[in-house]
Length: 146
Length: 146
Image 1 (cartoon, rainbow over the protein chains, first blue to last red):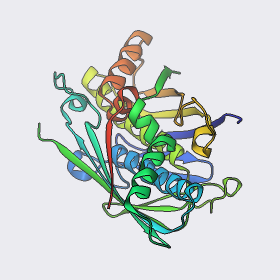
Image 2 (tube, chains in turn brown, yellow; image 1 turned 30 degrees about the vertical axis):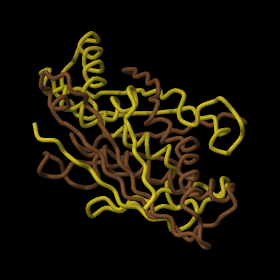
Image 3 (cartoon, chains in turn red, green; image 1 turned 180 degrees about the vertical axis):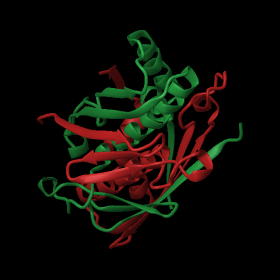
Image 4 (cartoon, rainbow over the protein chains, first blue to last red; image 1 turned 135 degrees about the horizontal axis):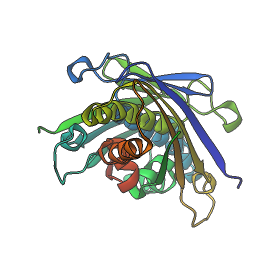
């Protein structure tokens, strides 16, 4: 299949607020006031969870279709743990990013689906979801100052 | 420092559109019509880039301050490569997620900052940015069907 490139163009409106332009959409990323922000959007780590949730929904529907069952809807609850020490600039061996992300998926299926099939469904979602793959295996990043 | 938990609660409105509730914000994730979506928001992989851009902005300002220089603003352009084969369900050894993400950061500094300092600035951003750390090192995910 042909490769796809995705792009985002962002600028800071202040030290915490970022306006990200993607196609004809604007996503606002910001920190809450208690962390010195202007509270106009979720913070980057929350936006990352939104990306994961959106991916699990799309892939969840696709895998269900491929497995031969249909969904009315999916509910997804996600939670992740962060230690802010490294971000804050403290000397620490702790990592800056999420140490763990936990997801609860609640599928509303049109017909009854047995638990074994749902377990297989989740397994295949994890394999085929691009965001899940990035979280599990990482991705090489190259940052250049212009 | 005390650990922080971030949370997102999402539901599908259709097989591609996800409404993600984070605090009092709603993020809409969707696919464009050419990929069978309803085109009401960026797709999950684009939202992931938005998370990265937002993080680079916040950490970029923080690291600059810690290093003793000030920024008027930062511009961030991000691009990532995807092979959709695995997501589509084809038998392949290719990975589902981004194979590479490239970032161009354009800092607008208040006073002139030499290139060596800017190189050190980017290096420290990469170390301290939580989203950068997740991309570089991955994160354990646990998915449970409810």
